[in-house]
Image 1: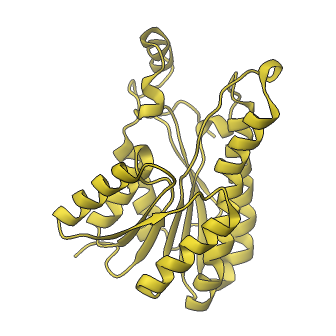
Image 2 (image 1 turned 135 degrees about the vertical axis):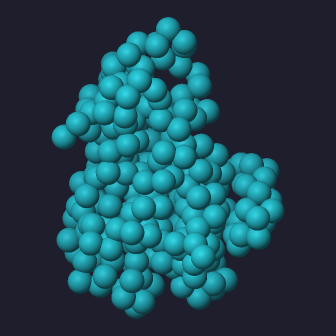
Length: 248
């Protein structure tokens, strides 16, 4: 028996990277998982095939979660399919790194919309369903770079810091409906996004991590599953999964 048997979860940006790992982990724990993706249909289908291979249950849920109507339509489709939504993992995100002197309005707005506005759109869409159920678990994927400065990432850091602040307010407002809202803040994690960092820079970064290694996608997925399955008395918190690189 899995820790999430009978639960329905939506994972945004689930076709690759951290989102993919979260979707897999939740499916292995028995949740029915809606795999959200924007344009990577082949990768989303590969994930669905893997979940089906161990008799998990999933559906593809295409939507640009940076678009309010597409987000709400996606949530409606998932609810129509399974009749409830218990878990929302707001994971979708992009980077468009530039120093402030080179930042463009388009680069700023694209990152804020994809990373931060999407959290509001999806949360507002599932909220009535979870309130009616008197149950919900919302987990927002922030970042260590939303807690500390990061050169060239003013847009990304602002979006991830905004997620932490949003999480606290949503937690206060939704607690009386038995809905918890928490954030997970990964540190440097081995994903396709990180693979492009030059080896010498990776070595410098690793030297500043007390545990002496980069995070794995599974490290983040375990934290998310814990909050979804075991975190009944945890809300408004940020769970740092960064190997000790940033401590508060």
